[in-house]
Amino acid sequence: MDDYDRVIHQPVRLRIMTVLTSLEDDEQLNFVDLRSLLNATDGNLGAHLQKLEDAGYIATEKVFIDRKPCTWVRATPEGTKAYRKHVQYLRDLVGEAM
Image (cartoon, rainbow, N blue to C red; front, side):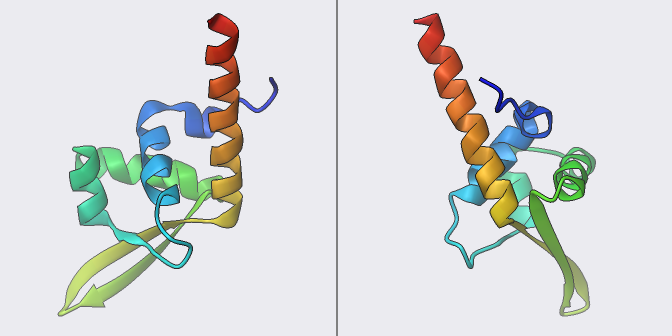
């Protein structure tokens, strides 16, 4: 059981990755919708997204729509792979406890 991922394991980041990896490969989610789904604050979500982006697990794209900034977020292939490995680690851990 060596697939524990400290970056993803944090509860908010695990939830972020769960949402993003449930999207189709070419889909992304905007910051406002992700914040609403997670019931997070701007600052809290922003900090967690930065950690995930620094790890290469997500990619963000900042654009302007009608002069308003909009940030789009998606899981990277590396992030999806890391998420799946971590979920398997959690399944194995729970299975051992049963």
